Image (cartoon, rainbow, N blue to C red; front, side, top):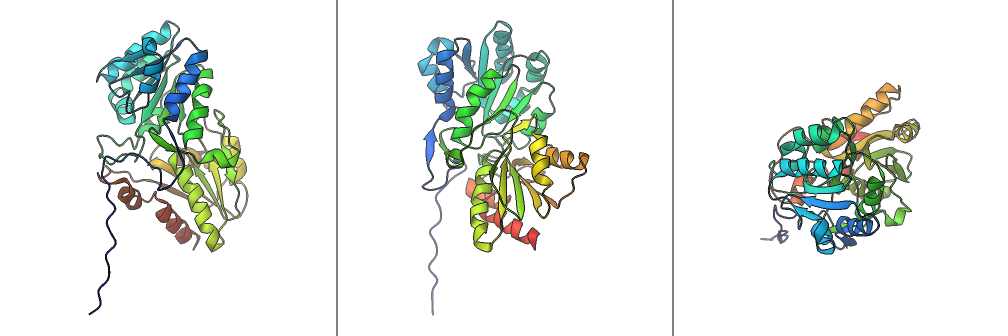
Length: 332
């Protein structure tokens, strides 16, 4: 009687919040270090958090500038109100918490105290989308939809360490409120090899291809690049258009690339299918009369499960393998 050796189970847990693959090059705390560099030349920059300095890499700023670091306790509404007050007095607050707490718990305070007065507050929020396995209480699957709908708000979804490092001075130079997703800890370094530079409001074509145009943001740009390389073996040419700024959207670049004939357009995002980059791109295409074959890779409109991230990414179709399989199916 023959026996089949069982593969050892991957030891992981819901606590894992890193999206770096095994052996992937990473940089530690790019946001914290970039903010320190910014603050050395801008004396009005302050750091504020709601008991999450260590888990948003803001503690690095606090260690360097203790007199400009404000720990507000577990009180996100107070955090946003105090940030508005500081901004009224000429400070430029960089405010950190988890994305769920910023966009769900403190939404009205951001809306009324910060956005309505167009104040210069930068909200940098960790654990975006499905980057934690802690379940609906910590998974910010709808944050982009909420913040896109807020007048005066600029919305950013960076891909990797380089994106974050370059984003920090760019949003500081922009006057007005910003909501930016944050990857913390050991963050993958993906875009270094693509001669990439972050520009607020600009999408960047990272690679070209004749069969599929993948329009992506955040960690899904990393996944899209992995998929593009994997599908080369099947002679499928995949272009990747990275869209780090969700609002304002670079409609000109999106339309230029989508107008090229013979390519399926697929939007990949670490966000619910409702109200994010996919619907923004679809509305842009339809409004301009551009109608290529169109698909979305995104999180479903449901409360997501708790568990290990690799398992959840496979389950909800945003892992490299499941994305590649979906694309091959759609191409027939």
